[in-house]
Image (cartoon, rainbow, N blue to C red; front, side, top):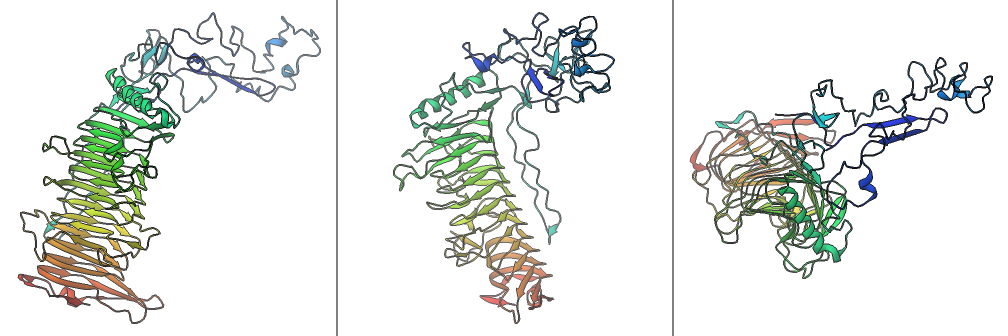
Length: 630
């Protein structure tokens, strides 16, 4: 059930008064400011036992509220200083104060819009849009707007709550995870020949209460340094972990780390299960130098239902001890955990992977990481990979910027890298991300029905990659490469200057349908002047792609569907091989065109008859061996 409410835990009225002549605005809050001026020695988040001045009739507000508030300057109601029954000290009835001159009232004295007297029962028109006034209770003690009382005479919460911090005032629950943080993926409509496009996997969010209680960590209570100081890293790391643990045990669901630059040891923070840890852009967690290789600024191991939002995670790659070794101390580690959501985090200069996800346990039990989302985040200058996925069942990597990965192999933006104990990767989605300037490549593909779509592979300033941009690993079951854009040509040696290549396959071996249960799709992609090699697939649809002066190469494929692809060539006498095939067994081709542009830009497109004539080729007869078709 969705409910409407503000994010503040306690709200109180805000009182303002304008001085009539000088137009100076004085404001005061009815909240207790004592916590800002003295240390809270009883460790309570807020105490109402010492109310601010003006909270009782015996202690009027500093704004001067009395039974006879000052007049606004109405000529029929001059200021109290000009009351004929109480003349001002000057006593001259012929020279009343200028603010009370009926022939020349002050500009602020519009009788139709008098300024506020500072009376909380009569707030200025409109009020503060970010802090709307609370409704009052009616004669029966109920809130007139149907909200719930947060303390005597005041309303604000939209549903029943409790005094979680024990300060005598009711606290308002807040949404735990913001709604609509990640848009849904639009399904691919239609089909390729007889194969329907697959439906996207459903990746589950953390299972946390819709509403719960929020607390900001008390850094003084837990001896946490908010200034980067290597000498205080140990106590700061321990203090943050202790605070998160104790606040969780006290019933808080959203734990806010306040602004600061926190020094952490290689132990990092370990949030545990069933919690949301919130950081703003003004929060930095920075690791001090270490020689360890298995560590991270945030480690989630064997946990469920964790939400991490915001903050800057800064590594120690340039201060790392023994830089040639132990280069797997990264930003975040997620081991055999489930229902994890990483949202809006910035990770920079770690001496390992920006984020490492795997199904690892010390006693080698067969566990698996599952239902993980990484979204709206930035990973910059990681030493090994931007994101490394070693074992997984259900992951979505969406709307991230992954760039400038460099240092130690593999040096890819995203690397699906199962290894050891026959690890597997299932149900992966990589969508709407931007990649640039990753040294060896952008994406290593592996898994069963892995979706790669709507990504921008912006090569950036680089003119050379060692391997990429894309590699498919051996035993990749199927993948869906849909509506991606590659910005420009990029030279590489590992793939012989090809946009795609495959590693680890047995030469000339096509996987059978038990190994590849579903067709693969390469559809509606925008590709630069480069050779695209697609290989080792059982049932492959290549449809509606645009190759700008590019070349499509396919080899070792059983049942290939080549439909409505477009190749473009520019300049007088433009020619060259646009397609080449090797060991293609069976398939269909139709609607493929080759478009040539002369110097004036005139375009002439013709059907590629040689390609389209391959329709209904028999499954036991290859299309050609090293045959170039134009």
